[in-house]
Amino acid sequence: MKISIFGLGYVGAVSCACFAKEGHQIIGVDVNEHKVDLINKGKSPIVEKDLDEFIAEGNKKSLLKATTDVDYAINNSEISIICVGTPSQINGNIDLSYIYKVCVQIGEALKTKNEYHTIVIRSTVVPGTVKQCIDIIEDNSGKKHIESFGLGSNPEFLREGTAIYDFWNPPYTIIGIESEKSKNMLKELYKSINAPLYTLKPEESEMIKYANNNFHAVKITFANEIGNICKELGVDGHVVMDIVAKDKKLNLSNYYMKPGFAFGGSCLPKDVRGLNYRAKILDVKTPLLNSLIDSNEIQIQRGLQLIYNTGKRKIGILGFAFKAGTDDLRESPMITLIETLIGKGFNVSLYDANVLLSKLMGKNKDFIIGRIPHISRLLKAGAEQVVEEAEVIVLGNKSEEFKEILPHIPKDKTIIDLVRIEKNKQTGENYVGICW
Ligand code: UDX
Image 1 (cartoon, rainbow, N blue to C red):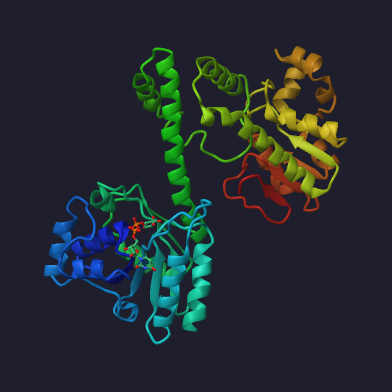
Image 2: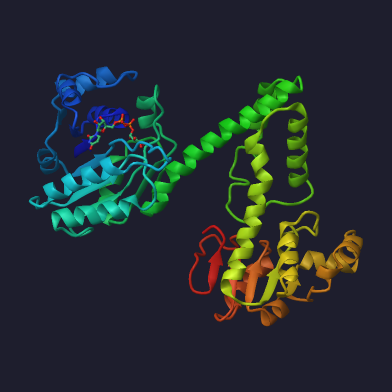
């Protein structure tokens, strides 16, 4: 394929070399003439293992050249990959000015091009950037998106030092583009890459890079804070974290990785507080671990805010033990939510099959009748009764029973889902998801 690559920095140079190695015809584009000269002499503009050799080879086979001329690059390629820098501004905001500038230039070049063109942004950009770039290119080319060009997001997952290896072995290939024609061209381009390929909406694709890198930062900081506490306790932090990482069921897995409501139950809140207190005694600063309880409380507030936003007063709660299949109400964040609603004078009705059973005979009977009588008084015998009485129905756990009820809830009632009762249900009409 004929590909132009904008930005001959770290990502751009590696992409040029690797695509040329695969036999594609590559034109690198940069404002920096020195970098352009280096590529045209078969030399690498950056230091990276094996890159010099690949660039020299691409140059020798006439598969790789570079230019500062955007018109030439656009008219001699079918796909453009944007890899220009997206640095941080002083306030932390991302500087997208280079991306926009390149899109203005691509738009102007497309004005006179008759063939269809595909453009992807490989640089890390905030969700919404693709939309902005589509507008810029439409304005500057006079052409229509989808009809004459397709533009989307295609983030990179390269690590400096192993970038060439990572190019062919990424965790996955992500294509976030609306145009079917462009999507198929990109699938063809990446067919030799040894990784699963996911096609998403542009905004989802843009967000993935941020989610990934922030997750990496959380992992590093978490390991450091645990390690710091370990050292003060005379424990080897590496022994602990090595074993933590061996748990592929709960720790390094998709478990606990689903956005939703606050955590609760008899272990997590207690143990987070316990470790934070120990760190405080040891004089070890643990801002990440310290933030967990605060962040959890904010999630309860967020759930409440969704309820307040409806402007309705009759609230029905379906499921309020801290997860489905249990009657444990200790530190259930749903109890905090319910108590806040009661305190603010909302009319609340509740249903939870397990809690109902416990109230009658289970081991939590004393807790339900003795410690939360104000809540137990609001319990109804069935979910239908709650749905009938309420104007707003809050789903608090993933019980199968609630999944079945969902399609029968009248459209004039609002459903607030804190648990994503169904994977593909999206906010819209009378349904609101807490994080989706
Ligand atoms: C860049 C992005 O910063 C990052 O968000 C993304 O995930 C990967 O790509 P990197 O390749 O390391 O990272 O950037 P950098 O080394 O700064 O290279 C950017 C190149 O773009 C430079 O060679 C620069 O001269 C060029 N450039 C910049 C242009 O060609 N045109 C411009 O308008 C601005």
